[in-house]
Length: 157
Image (tube, rainbow, N blue to C red; front, top):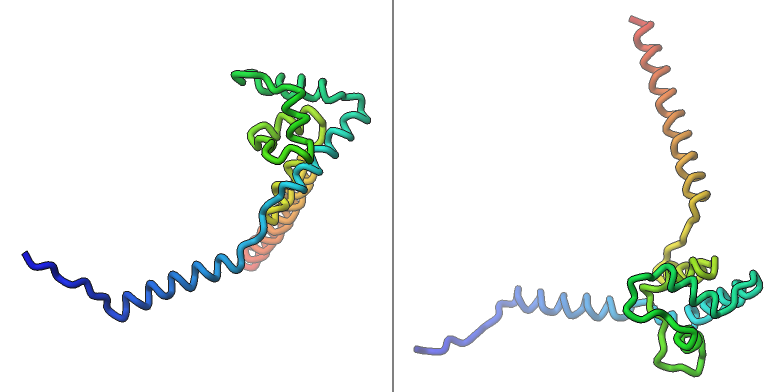
């Protein structure tokens, strides 16, 4: 059986070229999302803030373990110290435990660092309710205008 030569049409080559150009453009526009130093700073800030509120590192670890009851091995003080030490190059805080850390320290700065890295802002419950109230008031005013317009039209007939 003869081996047919594969040939590409100029249309196919244009597609491959366009894909290569798009990939190069994406790479050139990619943001630097290595937030290691910012995250470590936020972790240490949260711990310092918690300490001022009377929570020791040991108590933070206890509180984190309260929130993570299904862990095979509980989090230890040694782990927390390794995650927050600048000298520990390969000890990174596991993202899946950030909510427990935030709760334990009463500080959401670490999660704010993550959100800001991808151009998002966090809002607390009160800010969200304020936004919803504003939207409700705007919608209420729109419906009032619509009702008044309909009343006007009905009275004219």
